[in-house]
Image (cartoon, rainbow, N blue to C red):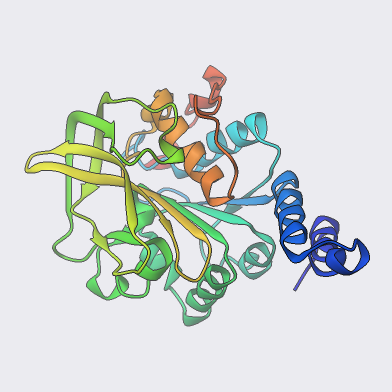
Length: 290
């Protein structure tokens, strides 16, 4: 295990605080939690190259770079971008040091299970309480066999031969859960490809619907939050097919607050600041995504 100076400080406070400071167990735990909340954490953003979709769609790199800029502008956390193509050789070290991993890649469920070693890497990461976030095609896979091992990591998935999706302009709104991720969000009309009727993990802790979309056969959950029973938090969002939808403030706030929630960060009731520079939306080399 690799420890940063911050993590060593947390370990010393949480392990030795009650002894050296003469604190009660409850006071020591409270101080430990406060210290953890104040320290910057590591957010690893995973992206891939073009996956065959037309330009302006599945723009993984451009979307992750925009998200990275937004995180650096509006949070104190350390942001690390990593291209997840091919063998992803730096994966073990990145996950060992990460607090939350964000995936904007193609068929994330299949990618995580590309090798037994990678699946175990993510299972161990989740077991130690690491946060996991996934958007659009990162939440699923075409193959039925990719579903079972992925559900305990993310809580819900778009997967298998019976998966449902649709391209449409529709209503996108918060559910009635009053969850911190929903702070500052509002209903909007948006054009997107939404995956819906998602498969959900049968868990003693509930999968909480955060946003829903009006699909052809009714309202369906398209963003969710889940506190995993063994510790750690997961957040998923099935939209974001079109790169242009990053221009929508509700999308940016939903995504940023979902990440911060997995970091156990307190979210202001009015919602976080998600302002961006217009040039962050620009796609300078569309020809590379053919």
